[in-house]
Length: 352
Image (cartoon, rainbow, N blue to C red):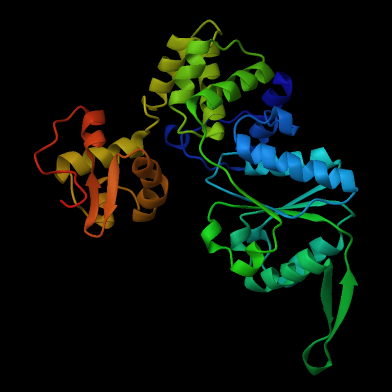
């Protein structure tokens, strides 16, 4: 397995990418070597695992395809992995596509018409499906048929095409953007939550075993504490610590190796990276803790406002470091404490 991983991954990540939950194609290839193949190998998400196990066991008992499944939650928590596990548990083929890749109803009709009986169709970022494709998907999910339009204009006609039973697994990071008619057609919906430090340690121990590297308990705990509750980030940091240990250490992933590697990649004790700390520093030192507008804050850290809002803010807000108010962003007491600064009287409140 370690050899398989080494063949798949040769890239190096820039420091600012290490703790972002998204993944590009190269990293998805790296993750493939570490993904669990069965539900009992999947770490964390206990409630979701129990519920999904019941759904799959019941479907196998009836000899039918399971109900359509909708998985929601932040990126990096295992939605794609669960889709692959569903197909593996059912012994069915897996077809993978995404909302942005399907721009027209005809694109979706071509995919649906080629599905085999019992096949699992994984639709990543399903909330980004084009509206005509959504409407076609409604009928396919409920009645297992699609209408193929032949001809144009007044002479056009619809030919109904019956589909074999299949299972749609939809994944979304923004469940609120799904239209109600589409959401209602899923027989099982699950929301994936962030992982605890203990669960991330178990993820890291398993990944280290697959990579064939010795990982000490203290190092696993250190990496887990800086992984933002996200397995994808934990595995990414593990690979960077492995690099440091092999190049500058003795090959053992111990506590000192973990701390030294994460210092090189500018990931601090809370999992904050360069951009996160720049936002906090600007907010506390340049603007007295706020409130300050998003655009002004973005200019202060030399980033686009969208980058600050979508990349840095979610984690900073979740950790109670900053607050978002009608008047702008404010630094909360935890931000001052993390930076080792004294909080001015009356600063950093939601009512500042």
